[in-house]
Length: 585
Image (cartoon, rainbow, N blue to C red; front, side):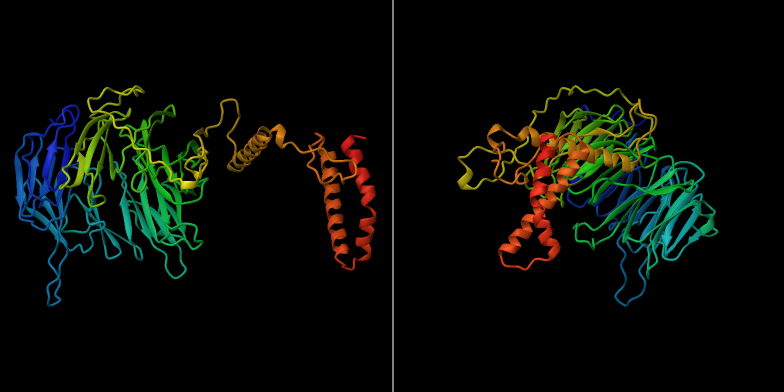
C-alpha cells in the first residue's frame, strides 16, 4: 500500500530527498537522502509506487512501498526519465553526441523492462523536445515521431512497427488519454502559402484525409499546442505566431480552436484582445478555462459549445489550475506578476480565498485535492529559493526556505491514481495553521517631490471588470447570442457612463444662463424627452454651426458662393425655430 498522504520530492544543491506530506512535513525514511549536487533528474511512476533518479553515475529505481532497490543502470549522463503508465518500462534519455570523425552517434534513448532490468530497445533521439514515446493508458500501443512519421508499436514489442501514420512534415502528435478506441491528434505546419492543420484519427484507421475524424486548418500558426480532454472527446488547439504583424503584442498572435471527435470544430471567441496565457480542461471534460487578454487579463469558463459560462472578470493573472476533482479552480499570476492567487469554488462560482505566493515559479495541486504546493526554484530565480504547502482556504501549513548559499531546482508531489482520494466538501473557513502569516509587502507608487505633501488621488491605469455569470437566467427562454450579449454590454456601459456624468455635475459647475441677445445654439441643452424633437434640435444646431463657420470665412475676406450666402440669410429663421422647439411651442 502507498502512504496515506503524498510524499514531496525535493531536488537542489542540498541533494535529493523526500518529505512526508501533510500534516507531518518531516523528512521521509522511504528514501535515503542523496547528498551532493550531482542529482540531475528524478521521476515517480504514474501511480506513485516507483521512484527513479539519476545521481551522475547510475540511474536507480526503488519501490516506495517497501523501500527496496529494484534496479541500477550505468547511465551517468541521463537527464530525462519517465515510466510507462502501468510501470512496465522506464524510458531514459541522454544528450545525443557524435564522434569527431563525423560518424553517427550511439542510440541515446533506452527502454528498460522494470521487472527484469533488461534493455528492450534503444533508439536515436536527437532532440530533447518530445523525447519520450507516448503510451496508451493500458500500454496496448506506443507511438514515436520519426522523420515526419508517427510509428506505432503494439504490446511493447519495439522490434516490429505495427502501424505508421505518414503525412508531409508532421511536427507533433498527441495520443488521447483513456481506454479504447485510441485516438491521435497530429499537427502539420503550413508552408508555401498552404495553411497549417490539425487532424484527429482513430487508431489504426490512417487511410487518408477522408478517414480523419476531424480536421481544422489555420494560417496563423508557427507553433501549435494540442490539449485532449480526459474523456478523449475533444481537443483544444492553441495556434500561435512568433511575431504579431500588427505590432499590438510582444508575444505574437494566438488563437484558440476547438475540435471534437464527431467532426465539429470552431474558433473560441475570446472577448478581450491579447495573448492567450493558459488554457486548461476541467476533469469533467465538459468545460475548460482560458486566461487571455492584455493585462489585467480576463479568465472565462467555456462549455463544449464554446459559449462562455462564467467570466471571472479581469485581474493580474496568467495561469489556471483545476483541482484533481475539478471542483476548485485557482487563477494565479506568477513569473513577472506578484503571485496573487484566486481560489474559486466552480460549482457555486464563489471566491474561497485570495492568498499571495510572492516570487513563485512553480505551482501544483496535491493529489488529495486539498493542498497546494508553490515553490521558488532556480534557475528561474536564484534568490529566496524554497517552497510552501498551502490549504486551499489560504492558510500556509508548512514553509521551507533554503540557506542563502543554496538553491532548489525541482519540487513535486508523489502522484496517485484517480479515485484514491475522495472529493471532500468545500469549506470557506481558513484552516488553523502554526506557521505565522506573512503580510505581503505593499509596494507604494513613486511620487515626485512636488506631489509628496499633497493628498493622494486614487487613479488606476485600468478599470478592473467584476466577475459575472454568463449563463442565461432561468426566466429567459433561450440564451442571448454573442452579438446580442455584446450589444447589451455596450448599452449598459453607455447608460452607466451617462449616470456617472450626471452625478459628477455639481451646482458650481452648472452652465450659466445664456443671455437673450446671445445665440441659443452655443450653450449645452438638455434633452426634451421626445426623440423627434431632439432630432430636429440637433439638426438645427448643426445648421447654425455651419452658418457660424461661413460668417467667419466671410470675415476673413473669402468670396462665398450664392448658396452659402442664402444659408447665412436663413440664420434668423433657424434661431426662431430652435427657440420655439426648446420652449415647447
